[in-house]
Image (tube, rainbow, N blue to C red; front, side):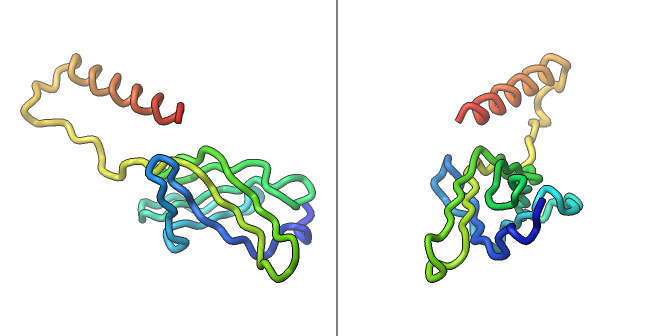
Length: 131
């Protein structure tokens, strides 16, 4: 990739399509796919990997490294003149629940219960992927 053509300043934001919320910039960061990827952490910060085109002029894909946000798409807006500021990358997706799945201790915790829980998780994941 020609790094000289990669925008030096990008306005970056996450947009939760399910709730219509825009995440603050302090809770999100991005890295380019060619850069070393950060170590995973569970600090609540969403890290998105941006894959740039061969000439580095625009993104061709994005994906999230965080378990709390599933990237579904993006918008790339280039300024028409210098007075408009920098390019803007808006990543659309769905914020996932941060609370771990809790199983009631009153349940018998049999293999049938575990299968039912697993089936529910699979259904939820499928529904999220269809949004």
